[in-house]
Length: 287
Image (cartoon, rainbow, N blue to C red; front, side, top):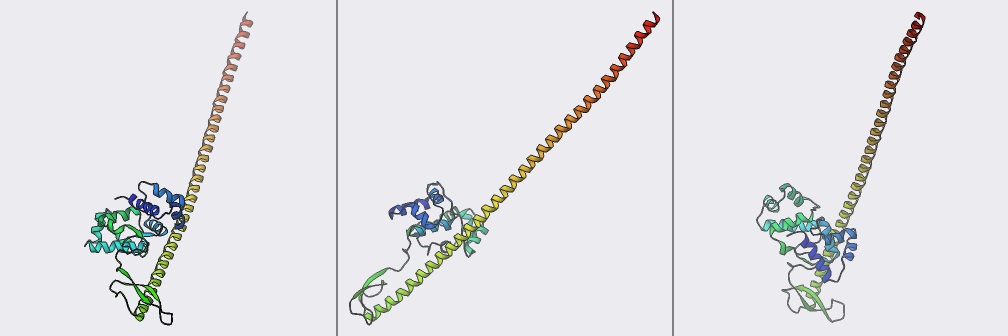
């Protein structure tokens, strides 16, 4: 099982719900070109947090995980590990990773991992069917719900209203009981919505901080690259100056040699000329 399966599943979900990949990318606030390239890559490997943000933007999530946050997903992985009776070391060995790496992921308050690591853990747990892509508000483990007909709340005109109640509730209840059930369901829904919004805000803050950290790293890398280029240019200039100095020294040495040769030639020539002149005078005197 490779990382391709996650993006293939997300692409199928997007098509099924009449969305576009561009819309999902824009909603996720990630670079659109980068996200679209992930869909085309044979083995995409972004962070798990980025993939979960794409699920959130598409109105989906991983089944049996409470929400589209890495903390919920890692918590579910730990539950599956305990259910399988595996120690952290045993799961790490199955997944082909270091125990210390897996321990850091499990114990981190804000965990994250590459998608390939997540894929390895799910495969090691044999939990592929537990991590299908489903609607965001679908819960495969929820208590079955039924619709019951109730009365209006106190003070309102009598009439019929639909309430969401648990499966063991009677088909019809008195007005007071139904009003209570409705009153309890609404705070629960509000709390759930609030929790989702809090998780979403935390995820957005984490993504923003990651983006800022990446920007700082890119700027530092650019500065280091500029420093390296300046150092290379300085080394090149130094080598060029040395080459020029060596050439100048060689020319000077050549001139020295030429000067000495010329002086020697002039001296010998003068001696030879003087000797010949003296000999000629001697011959003329004798004759």
